Length: 84
Image: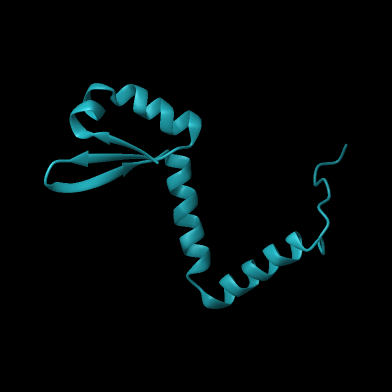
C-alpha cells in the first residue's frame, strides 16, 4: 500500500483517484497528529462490504470456505454459462 502525506494527496488528488481506480491499489493518506485514512476504488469497497456480509453468517461462511476448498482441490468444474 502506498502512503502519501495529506498535503501531497491534496495536490495530486486526481492522479490518486486514477491510481486507485486503474491499478486497484489502496493509498493511505496520513495527517500529522491525526488518524490516517485509506483511499480505495468504489468497486473494491463494495466488494469488501459484500464479502463481509456473506461471511457474517457462520453457516454461510462455512459453505463458502468449503466451496473454495473444493475449487482449489479440483473437485469442481466450471462450465461456460453462456450458450455459444
